[in-house]
Image (tube, rainbow, N blue to C red; front, side, top):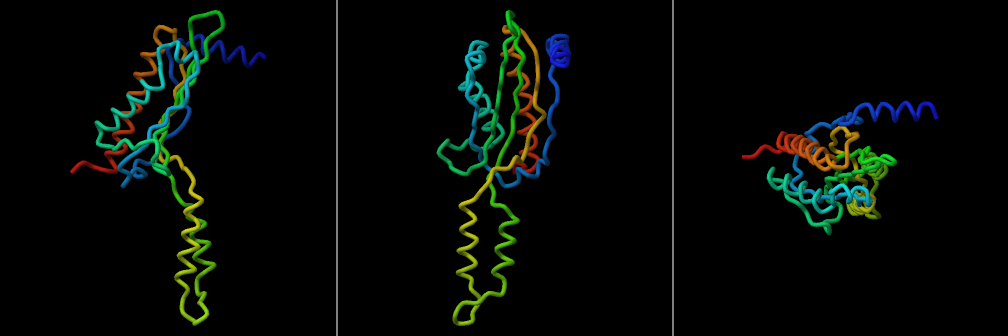
Length: 195
């Protein structure tokens, strides 16, 4: 109980702050990626009451991607790279202040390299009934791995944590989101320079 009160005291004492909670990945992970789907988590009633909407956040992200030269892929583009935004607002009881946090990340789908290596090792040197190397068996085994893709974080900026009034939460979140989108654009352009 005492630690919870201390934490709340720290948050209350810093009414317009943002703290780093995570690290960044190497921008080279963007190499060769030309497009992303945009996923914004659903917002609760408190978020919408502050003036933030899923559509406005999604539009801001999509415009930033397009300005950079990144293709915005449709939601139906299965297994495509994703730019993901998660925003949470928590109203302070009997107050017009919000504690909030958000994070922006990029994910890409991949096939686990360790499984590919294991399949290749298991099939190395195997021959079919006529004594020839069994490329068909090899290709079928590797193709089966495509049914087991996984999403990995390829880029992220530090999560933001803040405490602001209902009147200013919109501007704080949108300003920090723009800064994060600028970092994403710079990372992508570092790996994919315009010609």
